[in-house]
Every structure is written in structure tokens, then in C-alpha cells.
Image 1 (cartoon, rainbow, N blue to C red):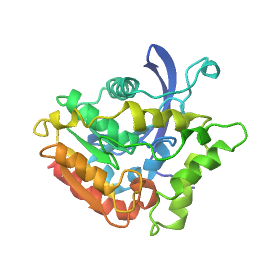
Image 2: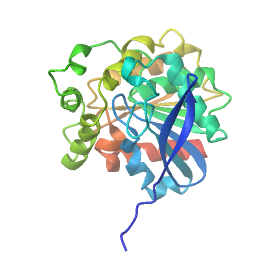
Image 3: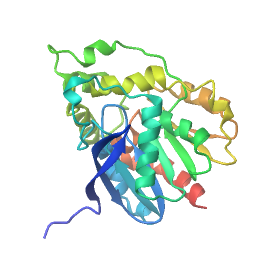
Image 4: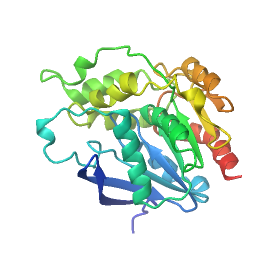
Length: 280
């Protein structure tokens, strides 16, 4: 008999902005719900290593889902007649609708990159609901630094150009197999999806004017930044931490922009103390 991983995957239909979307979700473990939000242009496969970590799943029910348009989740009907563009309000609605659909009580929400940005919005607006938030590579503001036009062109392979853009954000120490697994997720992204995500991450989701209003007594905030992240740099994360009084900030040596997928063994060294503190 094959040795199966402990991950269970399922589909369900969820309302997203008044439209029915078929959503794919994976989970493993039991205990405190830990909702995991993937990076722009990728999907929830990034968190598979956390779901296979018995030290984590012993106390946490790790839940990761593909946003609509991503991975195994469908776009809404009629997607061919529209341009995908992720807004702040839509992103917040998706996460909250998901948590309510699963009837989660005081979950922890952990997001990476654009997921790390949206959890800060949630820490302010849903402080009474979330036990705490963990922002991986998540600053409250990030300026564009390359042209988005390259990410959706008929004369350029969309998946390969998306992977090329993010390849420099993987730390040089990250194991080669994990590096290419991380990039493979980007190579499989839908047309224009990475570009649509970056609308939120680079434009609509700026939050530095309101992030100082987060009450970390009600909702603790943890900010973890990879030493080799050239996108959401440690300096940008530190600036965010300075604005959010009472937040906890850590720079992770030997890690890039995708800690949970590019070097999961190294990442767990930094994540486990945070999860222990939240559980405590």
C-alpha cells in the first residue's frame, strides 16, 4: 500500500461577490484553526509541507484554499468576458466568507506576500474574530518595481514569465527541489491571474495610513520577513512593524519570499515558536 500524506482535499461552492465559485481546499491536523493564504499568482500547494508536519498539525488544524481563479478553484461563470482584478474589498470578502462557511471559531490567519498584506487589513477590521494574524513577507505598502504588461501578452508564455519574475525572490540557500517546486506553481497559473493579483498588492491594498490603528492587544500581529526577499524586503517589513505598535517582527536568515515552500525545514524553525506563543 502507498504511504499517503495526511492532507485531505475537497471542493465546495462559495459565494464570491454574489457569484457562485467552486473552491478547492486542503487541510490536515486538529486543534486551533490556522487558515493559510497563498501568494499572488500561485495556489495553496505552497503550504503542503506545513500540513505534513506533525509538530504543527498536532495542535493546529491547517487549512489552505485556492482563491477563485487560482489552482484548482474555478473562476466565476463568464470569466472569458472579463479581466481578473483582485481588490481589497473582494479579497477581504473571500477570506471572511471562507472562514464563515467552515464555521471557524477564533482562527489564526497566516498569509504570504499579498496574503501577508490582507491579514493586516483583517487584524484591524476583524480583531474580535481572529485569534491572531501572521504576515509572511507582508508589508502595509509596496511600490511597483517592474512592468505588469509582460505578465499577460499573447506573444509571451505567461507561466514562464511569471516564474522568471519571482525566481530572484528565492533565497540562494533554498534547496533546488523546493525552489523549482515553488516556481512550477507559477508556471501553471491562469492567464492574467498574477497580473490581476498585483493590482491589489501594488495599488489597491496600500494600508500604511491605517495600519497604525491595529490594536495588537485585541489581535496580535506577527511579521516574518525573509532575509533574501527582494520584493517585500526586511526594511519594508520593519517599517510596517514600526507603524503597528505592539507587533512582533522577525527577520528569517536564509529565507526568501516563499518561506513555506522554498525552504520548509528552515522555515519551521522560525514558525514553531510563533505558533507556540499563540497557542500558549
